[in-house]
Image (cartoon, rainbow, N blue to C red; front, side, top):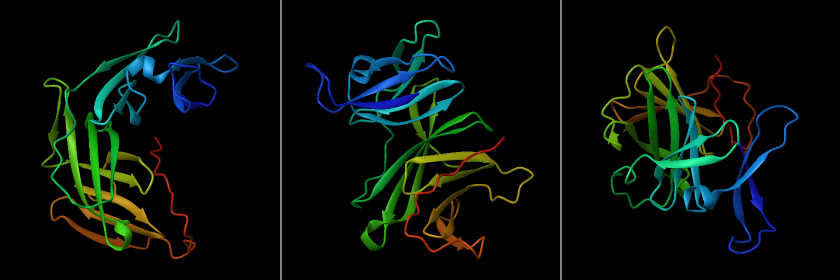
Length: 215
């Protein structure tokens, strides 16, 4: 799936309007569908793939929506999964980021809310995690994230999660990088520790890094 900005759209669409492009396979043409015609809103938020389905947060309220793709026609339909967004703790900090993350090791769809602090509010200092309850159709604040570790790609809005069993990873922890350092947020103590796993990491201002899970 790819996103395309439509710069030559005709009314009733705006000049800057996103599209979803679906390709069935190599050397096949893309099926193009306007985002607003699918979800009724042009504000396309963060998304992830969970159990072979696409889940996305849309609109000002970040409503979780499932996108179903017809394999024959390539047409996409949207099904709202919740009536509201996660009940976040009130914060007066100007900087925050949200993440939609799948945890296949324990079949959880997670919403991670990062709050920044420090110089220019650029340094993460607190996290909230919510798990989606597919039966009740709502987000539930997680009191524990179990035997998994969450990896946040900061400051970009991507992330992943994996099991800590038979690894040297710490459970109940969120890992993120800032500059050339690796930080670990402990979910139990709400504390942050830091390490430099490789002494040869270059000193670069471009810290837009992405975590990837390799099976």
